[in-house]
Image (cartoon, rainbow, N blue to C red):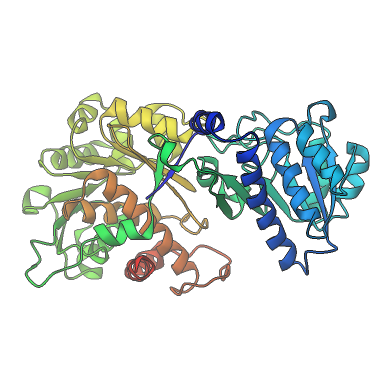
Amino acid sequence: MKGVWTAEQIRTTEAVLLDRAPEGALMRRAAFGLATHAARMLAERGGVSGSRVVLLVGAGNNGGDALWAGVTLRRRGVGVTAVLLDPDRAHPAGLAALVRAGGRAVDPQAGLVAATGADLVVDGIVGISGRGPLREPAATIVAAVRRAGIPLLAVDVPSGVDTDTGTAPGPAVVADATVTFGAPKPVHVLARSSCGPVHLVDIGLGEHLPEPRAHVVEAADVAARWPVPGPRDDKYTQGVTGVAAGSATYPGAAVLATGAAVLATSGMVRFAGSAAAGVRARWPEVVATDAIGEAGRTQSWAVGPGIGTDDAGRALLSAVLDRDVPLCVDADAITLLAEHADLRSAVAGRPVVITPHDREFARLAGDVGDDRIAAAVRAARELDVTVLLKGNATVVADPGGRVMVHAADSSWAATAGSGDVLTGMIGALLAAGLDPWWAAGCACLAHGLAADLAARGTRPTSGTGATAPAPASLLQAAVPDALRTLRALAR
C-alpha cells in the first residue's frame, strides 16, 4: 500500500528537515524535480530548447519552487516568464536567480498575454496550505490558459483545490500533470481529475513521516490476499458465501450479487430469498432457497440489494443478523439500519462492512460534507463497523481508524446494478476469511478494474477505448479478467 499524508503532517515533517538541511536545499531539490518533469512535457510537445514556459508565481515557497525550476529551465534554453501575482511576497532569492539566468518577470496584465502564448504554464500560485478558490487575477489567467488548450503543470497541488479533501469551492486549476514533493497528499487520490498524473519527487521526508492519514490499495495488495485454491482446498475451505438479495420487484439484484460472489472465487454460494428461481436459472451452481432458515451454513452473508424496506425486507435482514458470521450490508439493508435502532445495535462491534453511497450515508450517519475521509472515519467509529463510502474516490474506514482510499480511473462503475456486484465480491472475500477492511478495499479495486475492462470489451488498453459504462451484467462477467489483470500487474 501507498500512504497519503495531510498538509499539516507534511509541514511538520518538512520543519524537521529544514532545521537540519542547509538553507534552500529542500527547495532546490524540489525545484530540480519540477524542472525535470516540465522539460519532459516540453519534449513531448516538440522540444525543450527554444520553447516558452510561463510561471504563475504566488507568495511563499510554492512560488519559490516554480521560480527555481525556471532557473533550471533557462539553463536548458527555455524562455521563461514569471507572472508575479503578489510581487511584494514573491520568493526573493528565487526571483533574483531567475532574472540573473535571463528570465523575465511581468505583471498579471502582461502575464495574461504571455501565458496564452506559452508552450507550458506552471501553476505555482498556492501550495498545500492554500485554502479557498483562485482569486483574481489568477482565476482569469488560468481560465484563459485552459481555453487556449495550453498544458498546465501544478506545483505540489492544483491551486484552488483543497489539499486534504480534494474539494474545489470555486475557480481552481485543472492540471494536466502535478509534481508533488516528499509524499502524496489526499488531494492526489480524492481529486485525480484535477491533478492529472502525479509525479513524486523525493526530498528526503520518508523516514521522518508519521503514520499516513490514509492508504491506497494496490494490485500487489489484492494479489496477495485474494484467495487462490490450493491442492488441498475444496468448496468448503475456499469459503461459503451466503447472499440475501432481490425480490419480486428487483430480481436482477439477486442475480448480480450472487453471480459476483460466484465469480469472485467463492468455493460455494448459497442464496436465500424470493428471487431464488431466477438465481437458479442464471447460476445453476448456486444452492438457492426461499428462506434463510433453509440456506445452510455459510462463512459470510451479503445482504441488502433489492430486498425492499418493508416488513419483509426487515425480517430478511433480521434473519441474516441472527447468523453469527461476517456481513456485507448494502442498499435497502442500509436504509433499514437507518430506520431501526435495534438493527444498528445488532451490527455494532461485529465484522460488518456497510457500503453506502452519499445519500444512504446521509440517512445513516449525517451529511458527508467536503471531507469524505473524515466522514467515513466518524461513521465507522460511531456505528462500530467498517464503512465503505462509495464514490469516484471511495473511502474505506474501520472502527480502529484505519483508512483506505481508492480513486477510480474512470466513471464506468457508475451504472445501475454495479453496487450489487460489489456487494457479492465483498461477501466472497469475507467468507474467505479476510478482515472487513481488507475485504472492502480489495473488492473495491477489483470492482473498479472490472468496470473499466467491461467498458473496453474486457481487454485492458492504454487509451480511453470506451464511450459509456457497460451494463452491470458485463461488469460482473469481467471480474475474473480483473483478478487475472491484478495478479499480472503484481508480478
